[in-house]
Image 1 (spheres, rainbow, N blue to C red):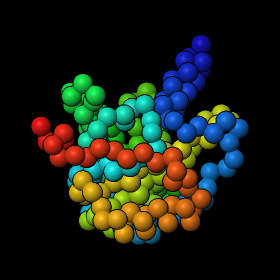
Image 2: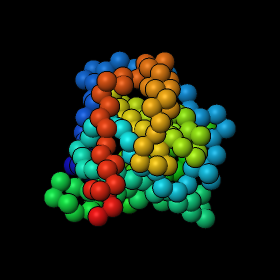
Image 3: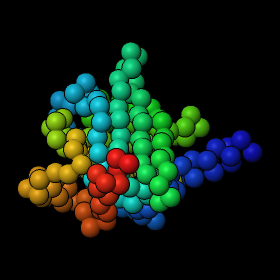
Image 4: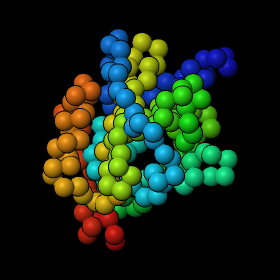
Length: 188
């Protein structure tokens, strides 16, 4: 019974992803940021675009990362829900213990959830970050993608470069949806 309960909880944790590929192909080979440095990555990031998912369906999405003394990162994700209320999820991130590749992290928002991948594909630390994850659950490929920025918008040229980079890694950019970052809505 215990194994069944764990399997169900694990399924529910990954079933939130909108982009599950049933009997999916292998995950694309996506490099992460070379010489990734966690310290300048800390602070506030605004969610500009993402693959849709059921746990981030509001507006004004932000992530705040704080490095802890033990080397883990406290993650505070916030959003404004459709009814105007604020929603927050506190989680934890860490280096992937099964990888020595810089920028390959893991994240979770509940101690009963399995750790999920959080790959920093690219960042300049001061303007943008591309975060991707691709994991398998049983026979299904589950993908997440976020484009984050230090401000509520990025110049069109920067966004174009990000899209080209993602496409060069065979990541489907047509699934991305923009997150509303209207200051009139977000700073009420």
